[in-house]
Length: 298
Image 1 (tube, one colour):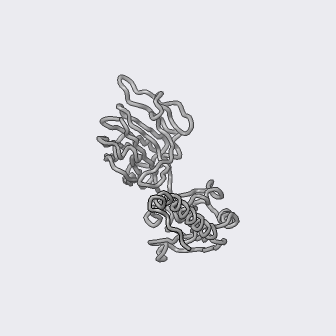
Image 2 (cartoon, one colour):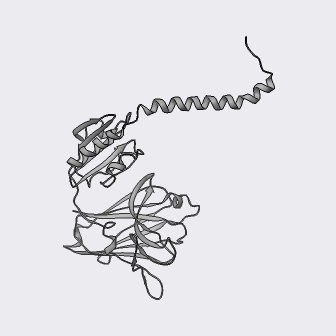
Image 3 (cartoon, rainbow, N blue to C red):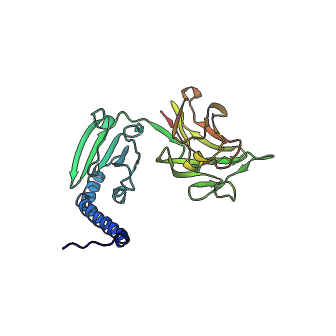
């Protein structure tokens, strides 16, 4: 025998029926997914393999890019987390380790054998691949890594003001919490990047490095944080690059999202060592969350 509820009563029970249906769906979904997830032992086994064979010049990544659990085991190693693995510049590394979760696949040169696959392992539901990359670039000087050696100042009138307090990976320039030059990790072009925060104020900001070795190329990346790139009316920021007091190039960073590469030939600058100075300026400093990195390559 079936029971028919009056339309009004049936309507009142509809939210309860919908809630029960959603709960049943969630239980089924997560029960099925739980059987697909790698076990803790899988991650531990992958970590043991990587650590046993890890050498200087190695780098680690994971597919899908947002999977973070592997960091619990290997977060102290050099780790690059990017959406587009095939489009990344790996030239400063010799070997790439990739951890693949269930269902994850590789594209581009890592899928079509353009990059040499050296080893492949399986640990439960996890896969691990090690790729031999092309000839590794010689990095002679990393400006971010050497930031504590820099001299930082603001060109105020009548005299420059030194940012001479080093605290928590940054040179403090004033009482304002944004007014510093420091090492940070921030999202640029939708990926986390290890860069130098160099928010310009109304006065030019100078970051000077002494004892920089001679090399073939000086290269930098520039970009704005997402909030800065979205700021209405945000002005461009100019980055001047000087070697021994002579400008070798400049970047005008427009108000847009991205992580932009710039390169200059410095082979004609002499035997070195050199003094390299970065000068950051903007017509208006408000919301100009400007970041850059840099290195000299042989």
